[in-house]
Each structure stands twice: as C-alpha cells, then as structure tokens.
Amino acid sequence: MHFDWIASPGNYDFYIKVQVKNYYCADNSNTLQSKTIEKTVLNGPITFTNGNSGHTTHSYTSQVVKPTCTEEGYTLYTCSECGASYKDNYVAANGHSWNDRDYVITVEPTCETPGEGGYRCFWCDAILPVTLASKGHSWNSGTVTTAATCEKSGVKTYTCTVCKTTKTETIAALGHSYKETKITGSCTQRPGTKYDCTRCGNSYTAWDEASWSSWSTEKPSGYTGGDIESATQYRYRDKDTTTSSSASIEGVKTYTCTACKQTRTEVIPALPITYTVSYDANGGSGAPASQTKTKDVALTLSSTKPTRTGYTFLGWAASKTATSAQYQPGGSYTANAAVTLYAVWKVNTYTVSYDANGGTGAPAAQSKTHGTALTLSSTKPTRTGYTFLGWAASKTATSAQYQPGGSYTANAPVTLYAVWKENAPTYATTLTVSSATASQGKEVSLNISLAGNPGIIGINFQITYDKTRLKLIGYTDGAMKDWSVGIGESEKAIWIDEAADVINGNILTLKFQVLDNAPDGLAEVTVTGFKAAALDESAVNANIVAGGVTVTSRIPGDVNDDGEVDIFDCVRLKKYLAGFNVTINASNADVNGDGEVDIFDCVRLKKYLAGMSVELK
Image (cartoon, rainbow, N blue to C red):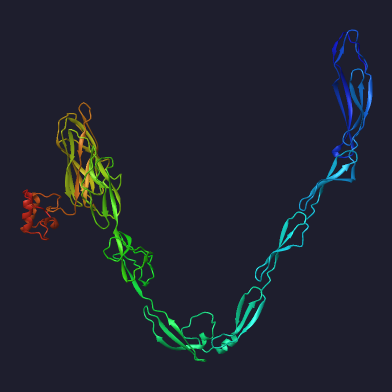
C-alpha cells in the first residue's frame, strides 16, 4: 500500500477498496458455494504531526483462523503500526458430521406421547433432531370390578403397570341356570313345570296345555278373566244365583265342581246408584246430551256450550230464572241427586256514543239492549254558524240517519256523529224559488221572486234542479223583462236593464215537465252561482231560498188533473156529479178516501177551498 507525502500535519481519512470472495454451504448442505463482494471501506483516520509524516506502508502480521462446522476459515492480516486489518484466504465451513453412535435423548417418550432426541456432531455440540415413538401401555391381567349376573353384564378393569392408566372390558351376562320341578294336576291345580334359577332365584311356570285341555268341559257362564291359573275356573259350572244384587246391595253366585262336587261362591257387585243430569238451553240452542252421575263419584260436566243470538252464555244453574251460574262447562257436579241444569244468559248490550263532530254539547253515551229499540237522547249539540241536521254513523255524512229522540234498533255498537249544515250568510236581498205539486207526465211552473232589491241592473245565475224527476222546457218573463234562458243547453238565466228600476216580486217563471218515470218525492229546484250588479257595478249578494216540485202519482183534489187544486176542480167535480159530459181524475177526486166519488167529496173539497180545517186524503 502506497501513500503520497502529506503536505501538512493534521487528521486524514483514507479508504480501501476490498474485493472479497465468500464461500458458504447452501441449505445446510456440505456443498460449497462462493460469492464475490466488492466494497470500499473507511480505514482511517490517520493523524500526522510535525516531524512525523506517518507511515506510508502497512506492516502486516498474519493469523490463520480455521473453519468450523458452520463458519468459514480465513487469514487475518493486522498492521503492527496502525492496527488496520483485513481478511483473506477464505476456507469454506466444514459442515456437520453426525455421529450415529452418539445418540442423545432430550425428552423421554411415555406410554401415550412420543419423545425427542437426536445425533450429536463429531466436531461440535449440535444435534440432529429425531422423534421417538411412544412406548405403549403395559396392561396387567385385570380385575373384575362389577360381577356379571344372570341377566346383567359385568365389568373387568385393566391397569397400566407403567402409568397407572385404566381401561374396562364388558363381561357377558351369565344367563339363568334353571332347576325343574313338576306340578301334578288336580281339580284345583293346573299341571305344569316350575323352573327356579339356582343362581338368582328367578322362577316361572310352564303350564301343561295338553293335559289342561283334556280336563276342560266348558267355560263358566259370564267368565271374563285373563290367563287361567286354576282348573277350578274351568271345572266349576253355574248352579244357582242364591242372592240377586240390587242398587247398593251385593248378590252371591254359587258354583259346583262337576268332578269333585266342591263348591265356591262369587260376590255379585251391588248395582251403582245413579242420577240423571239433564241440560236445558233455556231459550238458546245446542244444549249437551244428558249425563249419568254415579253416587259419591264426581261427574265432569259436558264442555259443550249452547248458543243464543244476542246473549252471552254465563254457565249453568239449577233454576230456570237464575241470573248467575252455579256450574261451568267441564266443571264438577258432586251432588247425589238428579238435576236439570238451565243455561244462564246475559243479554248483550251495545254502547251508542255521540260525537259533536266539531260542535259542543254531545249527549252522554247510551247502552242499547239486544233486541230492544233504544230511544236516542233528545239533547242536541251546537256549533256556531251551523244548523244541526241530526246524527249519522259516518263522520263525513251530509244527511242525517237518526234524529234526537228517535229510535236506534241495530244490534251493534255505534258512534253517532253530528251532521251539520253551514248557515248561509244573511243579506238584505232574497231570491226565492216557489214550490208546487205535480204528478208524473204533467207540466208545472215555478216562480222566481226577488225581495229587498237595492237597484239591480243585471242578474246571472245557473238553474239547478233534480234531473231524475224534472226537465226544464220553457220560461216567461215576470216583472223583469227580456230574460234570456238557455233551455236544453246551459240552462243559465241572464237579465240586464240599465234603468236600475227597483223591481221586487215575481221576476221570472220557469216551466218544467215532470218525467213519466219520475219517482215520487221532492225534486229540489234552486239557483247557484248567483251574481247581481248594481248601477255602480258593485256586487249585490242575496239569500237563496230553494223551492221544488213534489212529485206524486196522486194529488188529492186535483179533479181536472192540471197539477193544482183550485176552484176549477170544484166546478169540474160539481159538473161531473150533475151528469155533465166531463172527464175527471177519479183517484184525485176521492178526497175523503172512502173509495167513491160522490157528493161527500164535493162538500169536502168546497170546505178545503174555503179555508176550513179539513184534510184531503
């Protein structure tokens, strides 16, 4: 190694570029492989002082390091001047040399678990691991821990002499060892063989069926027993019933052997005392069938329940008029007596509640009894700005189903809601549609009148009516002239007069045709969308009063059938009764309802037209 001269004293670093060839064993094998590594390393610093410019070449001593089983060998060179060193002359590691005679056990195996051990290396203390097999148990000859019997198996237990672990083995049951004893037959003894186990005492008897059959004559009358154990039960026959049984008293039956004449008696059980328990649905249906109760034995009553519309079944009682039950279906009857049990019923009730439906003062709820009409409360609720129409089962109803003080007959609970009609505002001006009565197929006129006119110069409205009963066919002007009405089209009416005259009374007459198939009843006629203008073009509001036509197939008193009852009808009837050739509506002419048209009808009609308090029927 060579250095240039240093110009001045100081500390200096110097570097060495080293190329190393490394030898090693791959994957713990003994096969050497090599790898060259080139590296630049810092090998300083070196301090130079005045009068000492440092050494320019190293003075190395060498030391040989031998390889081991796992480490490579090399020569170490060390500078005696500065201590710098490097390695060279690498020698590969020797690798292990396993000694198959030097075997080491690290964990001893047991009866059930394996052990651990291995072979030691010749050169070092490394060990090649080897698993040692478990030794297995060494069982002794065993001990009987539960002895076997004739019918049950036993148990034999074995113990390992090394680890004291135990195992068991089943000993088969021994089975019975029977000793036979013959049984000689006679009138009172059935022949056969008895078997007794000499070990456990178990025994049974095998009867000699062949011998028994040869002795039998006939089975006793009434015998219902099981296996026959005694010849007597076959050899005896009926003799006499010495005492008959009766209710609560036992009887006796005597039997005589046909071979040896020996007798025996048999008690005839007393007949039980019984009582009949009957059921009465008491206005309902589906009562259970009668039951029989034995004396001093509790009877479980039938679980069947009768039914009755509108009633709830409460149970049974011994009284037909009872209001509470003494017994329940499936319950117990213990009395020693016959009885008829009557169904006890409770009539169903239904709650009728009231809802003021936006108003106040609804009546308190009422209770309605099944099958009995309920008189509804006469209390009426109130609501500002509305008129109470009655009650209905729907909260949104617009017409009433029931009235205060009316009758509710349905057998069901209900909430009745108040039905309200909003009050129309009150104005100074009123438009009124008149009313009339007419029969099917007739024409009828209705007047539209005005009151409180402040000086209207124009009116426009829609004519609204029941088109299932009526048809608008014409119109005529009233006090207001030059109306325009859309007959058969829009059916709107309009009038304009800029004079602004104050006209009240009948302003327009509408003419309707009653349809031939119109049902009887009221056909309402009114106006909607009413608009009226004053001279200054301000709006004039009006109260609208609806009218209509009462459609009826018969108008009592309308003799001439023109839809009205007036003096012309009285004249027509008088002519008819006088024999003039005129036609009348005979049904309408019978105003007293006696089925005839005569002078009495004429008198009644005259009184009616004179304003007397009489009724046209």
